[in-house]
Image 1 (cartoon, rainbow, N blue to C red):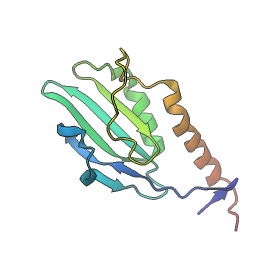
Image 2 (cartoon, rainbow, N blue to C red):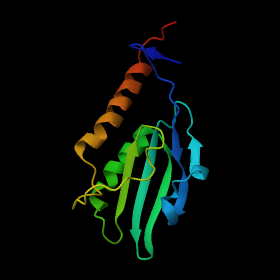
Image 3 (cartoon, one colour):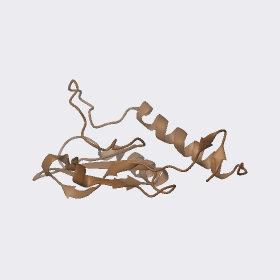
Length: 135
């Protein structure tokens, strides 16, 4: 385990995990998994709008892969038919249900601040992997 600037780089979070689920957003206890330590440091959520309804995919993910996928699909996140929205987060069970807020026209599009915490975590992990281990 690397310790860099007093912060441990060994991370394990819990995420919801399911494939192609429509009912109840797959956010019940039976879908909770422990992510792989030091590999899967984020939770990922995909929301697909299809002809037969909204489909969800949720999983553990590595920060690099999740952030690349999220930014790559941002242009397809419209909330309309064939929309694909991928979001990443780095706290326990953060890919679970969203509690209703006031409706907005861009509810599917994450703000720039949505990426701030994951990017800072990614930078911190990079820096920790390049610093000498402290005993």
